[in-house]
Image (cartoon, rainbow over all chains, first blue to last red; front, side, top):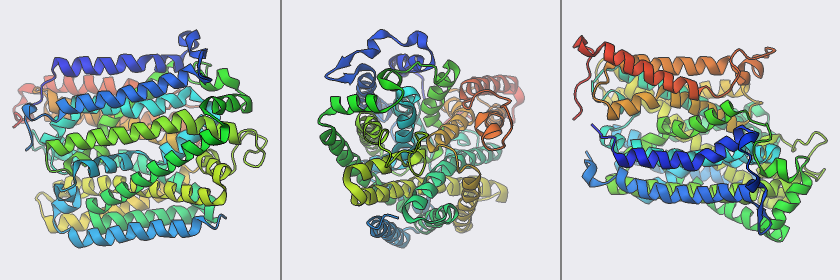
Length: 77
Length: 501
């Protein structure tokens, strides 16, 4: 039986918190913050934020996969 | 018809058939057919996972969606897979690999050795895979029709025939190598198109400036979400279904059974995420806006209604034509074709193994490796036949949306049972079965009475259920049902699940 530890709970929360602004902004104009209209080197900020989040999530998967497939968690069959 | 596309198409078909012939000479046992003998290396499996996941949805549907509506709700479609992969790594991948052997049924029924739970896992796997498969077939039919001037029906049948040959002939080994070849081709073509887009516009900023000028939505409508295109329930439910739903997609989960050890499983996950993330960065950050910039205001590519020639799923293909003429269009189309073949072979693989290893074995009452492999091959043919028929009914649907539908069912039917199987000792067979069937039936029913099927396919005036994404409602309900029934049947002795090993 696998154990749902603090690592799993906090990691899942972190991912949800990072993702939430994008989802909320999509769902309602109330979350359409003015900063999204800004530009960086001619590129609108919102697409840049999405790209940055994709990169952050790639790093998080790398970190989380270490825990998911560690031998200390029970190893292979 | 684009002549350079024809030899490249034929080459792709020959390479994949060659792989199948090679794999068929190596596949002998059940383990070879279902899990490639668990001999795939971590990096190979990472490429195969990426090849399995990045479908017609990624390459055709999501570019088409950006072209029509900008970042809203396209950003969610691009982010969800990586959010889902993170959650999969945190919650499911490790324990699932330790609990399973060939199929999701091994995991779900593993604790209790319950035949009914294995049967449910089989039915659920087939339902999800077929819905997912239909989206891929629709993309394939449209693509081949556009390039060869072939009838849509003939195109769909051709893809169905090829995917049956791959899976029935070479099993998981053939599917894996078709996916690896496709992933390498996709990475290369996306990189080339990305560089060409930036070069043509004269910089990334110029890509965005030209796109804002070309599209009637302007910069605010194109690059900032929240203009009322997607309501809050749909946005949250879509995000929920397409991220959490990843943990319930059988064709992805069974890929972790194809590697020999935990080290290889970890390497697969990291490699797959790096590849998917890298491709998505280029697709969302450059290719989508560039398609708007170069095609939207050009009457050679877009009709008066703003529709790209060949339909919304052909935007990426038309962009390659705008960038590199018929030659690049031919190469890109061949990659898109390989993309579809790789994904459909993974889906048929999941369907056929569930039908033989989970459903047939339960109905027969005992294991018979030889007969199971015959059923495996017959199931591959059956899955193709069903997918072909459904591809006609859903011809006009956006392929990205079809994938979201599959994930909505996955999140409702599989995720609660998988998570509780792995983490909750109190789960009973009756609880798992009731919750799983509730999630499966309710999500399918709500999708049928929702706008996508009730209005667009069955042509009713208004939907009975207002949203296309029922996962947000159904998954928590399925959790509650599973837990409640488990608690109620806990003392029932016969129904109680055995402790995990």
